Amino acid sequence: MVENPQMLESRLPETGTTIFAVMSRLAHDSGAINLSQGFPDFPVAPDLVERVYAAMRAGHNQYAPMAGHPPLLEAIAGKLAGEYRCSVDPAEEVTITAGATEALFAAILVLTQAGDSVILFDPAYDSYEPAVRMAGCVPVRVPLEFPSYSVPWDRVREQINDRTRLLVLNTPHNPTGTILAERDIRELEEIVEQTGVRVLADEVYEHLVFDEERHHSLLSRPALWGRCASVFSFGKTFHATGWKVGYAVAERSLTREIRKAHQFITFAVNTPVQVALAEYLAEPEHYRSLAASFQSRRDLFLERLGDSGWAPLPCAGTYFQLLSYDEQSDEQDTDLALRLIREHGVAAIPISVFYKDPTDHHVLRFCFAKREETLVDAADRLRQVW
Ligand code: PMP
Ligand code: GLN
Image (tube, rainbow, N blue to C red):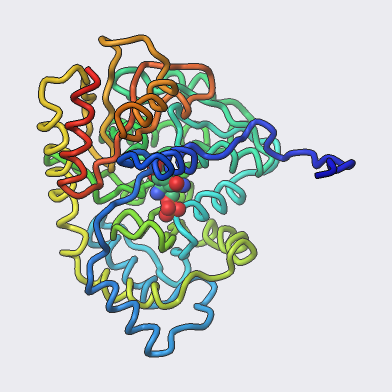
């Protein structure tokens, strides 16, 4: 092919293909068990699928209202009141988006102005930095403390200056599986009060918190309301990552801006799925039972690994278990991830890819949102490594 004489100047010169696409592709091509990209290998609840069919048959097949199907907006407001005692106006403070990814992108765009600094924590979920860059902003990466992956609040304070506009938090946290504690949220409130920075809270794993702990939604904090947008994903909650339906919640003046972006990124989201979710969400047992089911998958995976050379790090929530091999080898995590696929038939995610500066603690991420037989088979293979 002739090379384009007018080479396109990249908006994202340092960005390659997301690790999730790369690893899932390798797993697929080699037939490895895929514990890399975070998605369940068990089906969506049949009655939820039935409701989507029913919505299609009933003719809900044209554009939904731009901000979302009103009964779904109301069901979300009801859930937020029940779970987090926060009162939001469904008509003006909730926006249905094409997955949490769109909500994050739209929120980053409108909560900043070009040239602002945005604080991200390493290891950071991979969509944050490109979104910040596409908004014309400067990402400032603050590493979480290893091995606890706790937030170094003093370092955060040191990094905030006149140009800092936004801080992006993720709890429960992907890829580490940690959650923010009450004292973290108090630190955050103090910083917000003292500096006026805004907060974007990625809460997509809100229902996947284990061992009697609970999720602290930033929406439940009156001191943050008006300065904070929170994003959620039905993909995670109802094991339907391919449906790509999520939402953003924020005080009405912020939501007005989020909707300005949303209406020209996607305009509106899949109507029959929204109709089905509105009905399904009205029954809280559908999401309240999730934590126990995922906790038992985590426990089965760890039990089956037994006393192998893999050292599990604490996992308080999400779909993901981190395993350290630092005692076994100093192989780079990216090399080990490739070797695991090739030699042992298991795909995982190397954590170093979520850092800005080269940082390799010799830790891999394994998704345990899988059927029991998948977890047993994968753990048996991993036990052969060390
Ligand atoms: N944030 C985090 C932390 C995630 O793990 C994911 C992946 N599901 C997303 C956002 C994106 O969610 P969605 O698939 O709904 O766009
Ligand atoms: N959130 C998923 C993960 O962490 C991946 C989503 C994606 O592939 N974009 O694995």
